[in-house]
Amino acid sequence: MTGTGKKAVTAKGGFLWAGLAAVVLLAGCSQNSTEARASRGKGPGAVDPPQNVPVIELETREVRRVVNAVGSLWPFDQVTVSSEVEGHVQQILADVGDLVRESQVLVKLSPEELQYELDQQTAALRQAMVRLGLSSEEASPGDPEELPEVKRAAAILIEAEQKLERARELHERNLISKQQLDEAEARFRVAQAERDAIFQQVRHTQALVQQYRASVALARKKLRDTEIRAPFAGAVRERLVSVGQSLNVRSPVMTLVKLDPLKLRADVPEKMSPWVRIGQVVEVGVEAYPNQVFSGKISRLVPAVSEDSRSLTVEALVDNRQGLLKPGFFAKVKLTTEKADSIHLLPESATAYAYGVHKAFAVENGRVKERDLSLGERFGDQVEILSGIRPGEWVALQPQGLKDGQAVTIQTSKSGVHEEDHDVHR
Image 1 (tube, rainbow, N blue to C red):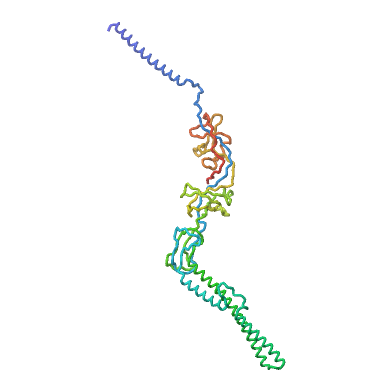
Image 2 (image 1 turned 135 degrees about the vertical axis):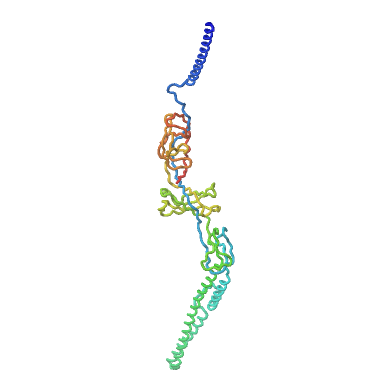
């Protein structure tokens, strides 16, 4: 190749390298221009824009304490009805689950033997009444002196006494002998003895009438007791006899429970026992009816606190006119007390929990400040603040994602705490 040709090639290659360098330079300038536009408006001290957060003010409220406890329902009364007489079961008129009225017949025993006994006692009473001249079982025996036998004996005695007086007068006048006077005295003494004997016999018969009347009343009671009746209105919990079974005195027949009202027994923690009073209202919930609340009132307080559980047992009467509640139900109890406290409340959503510590973010001068909280009791969706937040401070409602010192703009919200009763959870 000639020298001229080499110069041409060299010149051509120089042009290519120069063009490539220009392209690279333009690309670098374009990138720098983009970065400059991206960083435009950010000076050396530029920060992220403040985050808009809803806040709520910590307020002090007066609340009435309500104790939550658990317990069980018991029948108001429970009794095992027994037979008061001997006999064979003739008929069973109630069974397990039946509702019975007061005095309703539950079981009938055979009355035959007791009817014979009543007839025998009645006959003996009537015999005694006839001797006393009584016409009805209810008639009073009256004065023994008015009875015919006593009157007759008294008349004979008076006659004998008069004859004795005449005999004495005649004997003084020597008109009769001493023997005749003695005979008159003897007849008087016999009449007097007969009168006394009849009087005592009447007294004895009157006592027999009282005795026979008692025997008749007892025989009638035994006859009535062949019909075993319910001592109160309730339900049959257990039947213990069968037809044809022979019963002795005090043989168990049925177990009855009284279902309205029911007794509620619940344990209240020792520290809350001073808040509980007789007559306070309780609200009862059971798992069988989760959406229904039953009401009652405290009727009794056990006078001592249990040493094992450190709790006070309370008893309340729960209305059960609808018959929905059953003895043995597990019950959740809400006990309204007269204990009132001024406390600080926040929605539980305004608190966060991490690594065993409850936290909240208070807003101060446009920034959030992380605070460690000490919590008390929970009141529905509210929580009691014991320390960490002061009354009047604003707290972020949604603490998730916030950092200590972060700039924020606030969106105020009224407190969700209302002046009402709140539950104290055990």
